[in-house]
Image (cartoon, rainbow, N blue to C red; front, side, top):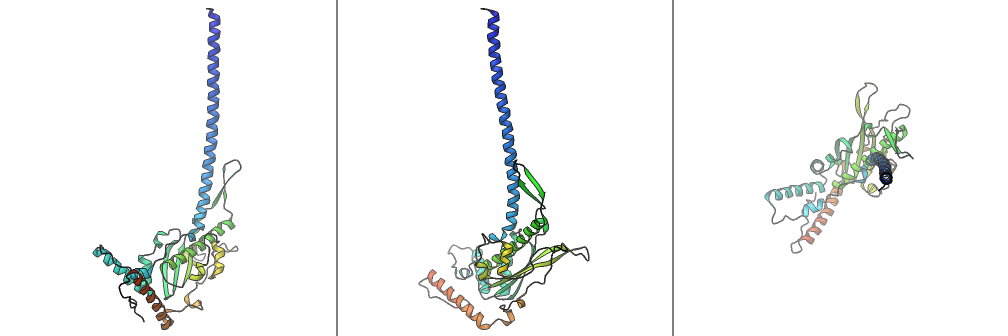
Length: 322
């Protein structure tokens, strides 16, 4: 065998293998670069999506609400034969509370809000919830909503090159988002109140923390107060409405916007029961109105008990007629 020819064949085979390895290496390097590009693009998309979702969370507080509480059901519910003494005691406590709630007892309203509401879990609303009970069909609610620091000061978007573009949030857009957030919180509070208590109207006042220019100290000031009737609220499509625009459906003071001239929130005098022409303070509530209301509820209780225990005579005296 010719050593020179054999060497040439060996060298040619080695070069072919080397070329194949180099080609494979270049292919792998290209694949890694493409993967890095895809990973960077996916990361950029995820970052922008997270920003957009954070805005959506701020503007969609009003879309969630607790299930309506069935107070008549609480009165008419029958105890289970297997119920423990604790379960029986709890049921009787709830039954007694239901009686008082259905007769418009302000103390029962307050107990309900303290013991049965989910307000404590709704951190998106803010803090320092306070309630007032001017009459059996009207409730006043005040909330200190989240401050301006709840709104991102920068906006994020995806460029044509697939990178994240971060820019300062335009002031007009920043305050527009905050206004919608405050109005969304107002709507949510009204929905929660109506789901929990049999009141006809609720006045929700939103307060914000701001710096008092006279003292330099942080203070709380009311910037929006809205009187919301149950029927008016039920007529809204919460999935599609604009929170700020929806305020036009109700009697309100303020708009939760800053003054373009001073850069500060415009404070207001909150609405109260006396400001509503159709509001009936507790001291002036008609005895006939309360009797009619309790009578109707007593009839409903009797119907439910008849349905649950057909062989047992119905009782309509579960609620004392005033």
